[in-house]
Image (cartoon, rainbow over all chains, first blue to last red):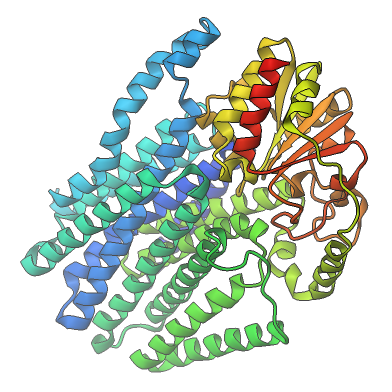
Length: 132
Length: 467
């Protein structure tokens, strides 16, 4: 049993270093989206809540587990959708603007098109998958 | 390979996905892809979790899980899609809070499941950590939400013997934690959970509205750690990795944010405790408001702008509240058409959180090349004819440079005071979010345009058109 916890501690310590490494240089304009995005990532606690609910017996445990799943799905779904909306605005160079500016950012028009078709989908996917 | 092994491999892939997502989110080019990658990783991991034998063995619990997820999604998606960009910080606070709540509930439930089997002490320790940090994050985020949503005052809330009371609550929690560790008693754990909620509230109360975004980032990091604790409890490497990633990167991000505000993290978290006196001094300052200010008309200012060579727009939260970013862009376009050089001077914490203003202006399709970060904008200020300060206050307050006693002393500011003329678009003479008076409002070269930022900008636009 104690080797188990040491293995988990190892993963934990390494993850601290990785966490520090990946965000070591962030321009300040991305602080908000990064915060929001990492907020969504810890929403993966949903996996944990599902496992707990699976093992729950009796009213108290099942009730707690149910609300845990509910809260966690709010976190993970809302987190990713909000972040995507934020980032969408960074990308957005609508066609009218591009036309007015005369050719400026012509390449980004295509990107925007692809991006916006993606938006409704990625909002729905975590839920759709969860419900299936 | 067994199904369990496959599931673990999928979890490994998801963990890699999260790492790459965070990496992507820290560069402007890959940010969006990073977020989508993270969402995909989460989706796959959640999908594979349905193959868990325990979950499949109880069809009632399986149904409940699906119902909870459908309800959660049905609430979260509209909320996240409809929220105004100005209210984004609160939204993040709420989603973060419920995540912390979920982690605390996981720890609690595991405790209830394990108690009959006399769990090992370190297992109870993991539970206690998860409950403590998760509850603090939940309650703290709720208060942060209330402050930003202006359901309560944004000023620091202080009361006598605050430090002593907070320390006592902290000690009580520590005592209960130790007692729970030894006895494995459920009622003790519940009391500790309640006190942790209280600690979350009283921890956040003394933090001023302007500092709340940094606080949200800190609470985000807390939730990450609580999730990592759930990972230990459930023997899940995925949760340990994801939670720790967020915990560690969130801590670093919090430090970067406070650095952008020119403050240290302890200063943000604890400064209000000792600063009751300073706040009172600020109130005295605003009591002396009988000093004259110069109020102008949009027509005059419109002419001034139209015949300027170089204009800086300094946006603040007021611009966001008035939803005036589109009108501001129209004004900038109109000026640019007349050959006026226009740029936006963006303070890193303009709006309510770092980078918030960039998001808002991007929404209004302001061209990137007109956006200047504070450090690039400041050298240009002395050659700028007019600084048009739209709904900003604290971020241009010279007190940050020259009044050592001021709560914002040391915060870098946009040097609007160095422009030849300063125009303030403001609703009233009321002080900004930090609650302190701004000398620049009384400067002889300053003209005030009172009113809603959007109305005033519309009038300015008309005035520039006819000039």
